[in-house]
Length: 393
Image (cartoon, rainbow, N blue to C red):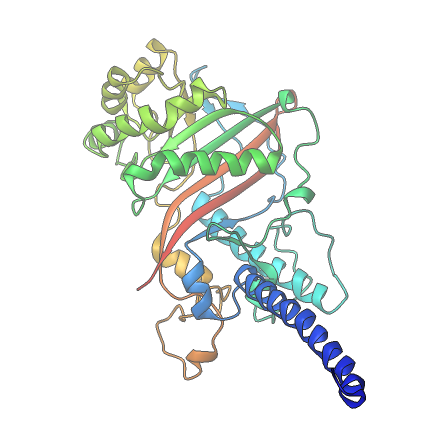
């Protein structure tokens, strides 16, 4: 039988034991939650980022709207599309402006005073309210890392994207995908679906009017149209182009995601060979004849015979070279500070404290989209997305 003194001290001991039994599981759960939050939180250092980020998705946002009318010249088979600005310059300048605007927006937001109204993207029109290029903004604030390793530069609020002002049926929506020289042939189907999905999500549509494919190594250049056509016949990779068309492009047409298909920089001989090997023929052939020559007569004849429209454009085939991409994202005077290593290759003394991603960055694809109001012939929406792979050096 316990003594009275033992009875007096037993209840405090039991009470303390009960507290311990309750507190320990709670702390274990707190540690588990903290560990999970740490895994899901944005990277806090360049080393963590490099281990998590696998790809970068770049976006320009909506560019300044163009009000150019569509003009037709050279017969009904030749259409000059609006917007003659060189695509590589337009892309790089628009990306740079959008990065800077996003950094300013989120920097201002962190200080409790926004200078602009977000619209899903930053404006992409260079309106940075006079902010310097070196504006302070941690990488995690103005970019977003998805669970699959995709880093969006800048971050996109899809719920706030405005989409098109009218019903999708009122527009001619043209999407052009550029397969870059550094891209992987076996991944072109995935690249195309991803690029098209981003555009449709941006415009809030379920399909596009026209998808044009630009293959690497293709151009239409020469002292005259005959020389350009002859030189074009030896370019590219016929086998790879046909395989890509069958596996990556035609299925999108059969699924109803694309109304028409098109190609770029195909001269008369290239186009003739291509038509023999495809099930769904292209309805459009884009060519860049610049100002030095006219459309080759053999190409005009073939296009009329096969009911293919010829579009004149000013796009650049090598639209986003590797060096240009690194300069855009590096630590140089015009860089966004996404990559840790300086664009000029100079080592920094404070490299361990330098924010940004480390690794080799390889551009894979670029997609350009344009939404034209059909009955007015004006561009309402225009922009670019680009994808690049990040691998350890």
